[in-house]
Length: 232
Length: 232
Image (cartoon, rainbow over all chains, first blue to last red):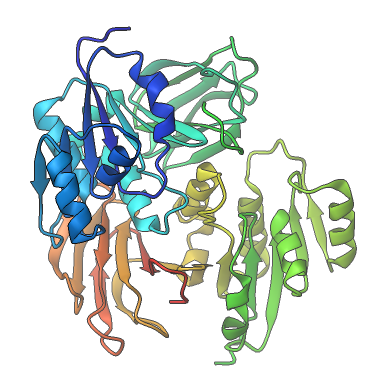
């Protein structure tokens, strides 16, 4: 693809981010910029990726680990742990100032193996914040068995991806107007929802048959997902 | 406590529900009613609890497992797998018709070990549905390292619980008016939020020092949480 802007890779602090998925993603961009958020910086180094910027309070790391990472990072922004923003919010704030038009690929933001449900929710809530909304038009999250992206009002084509996922779930984060799903196993004629609604367990019919998603107002999260670990 | 209504225990379908936590919860009620949702029914039987009602499409179970569970259940409601509601929604629908005033304790609804992020979100979204809202005034979820409950506008006192949790997170599911947090490590003077906001990683100061939470409009989820497995 050779996109004009560098791909921003964010590795957040959840355990076991699926960085082994990264090479095939990097192949689509000529330039990359790696941000390690809190212990995500450690995960980048462990997976032999560089840290262009380390960011966070780093309170989950031992002092020696922190010094070593700081040494290996091209830039380093350390904050006190008692602060209003989460480490990931600080990273998105930085991106919105420096790379507002780049694609953003986030690892370690969901972390079903981590025990921090509150962090998971805080990361799912990022697109609610007006300061980040423009970024979420070109941000996606990757975990070992899923990929997720956000959609704003309009007509959208959802492709299955390299393999057929077991499920596609369409989740409104807000009330929505005229939500329509076409070309899926379970279609939806134009419908309004007055509150956030999780339409789970939909399916693609075939690899080469995209699903059409459209709506007139609101914000939607789409999750491509497998029950087993497999790239989607 | 000897509450007037039976405690309704719902075991939903996520892997490894923390049913070993149940005996100390049951001790507070003179009567109980066990609902096994989908493979949650299997988990109840494995943990030597009865199934008063088995509910779901049971598509995650082998045919033989299903027959065995059906045999062991006092009542059984089986639905086709292609349906608008999730299995958990069907269970809450049933509760709202039969036990609308009972306390409801839900296991296996979050399942960080499961790979179904969409199910997790669908369960977090249950209180958005007008048909379930009255139930969530007296519903709580239990997982191995956390407990969560919902709050409607008013003044509330949050107790630490049997042990001091590492974190208390206050998460608004809607815009909120005049949200105030007092008596916590990080307090909040009355503040409005125009969109859902996750205020994570707050802390109790001491076991015997409750946190006061108040707000005038909106819906709030509170999570008592540990980083390690420990009852809170």
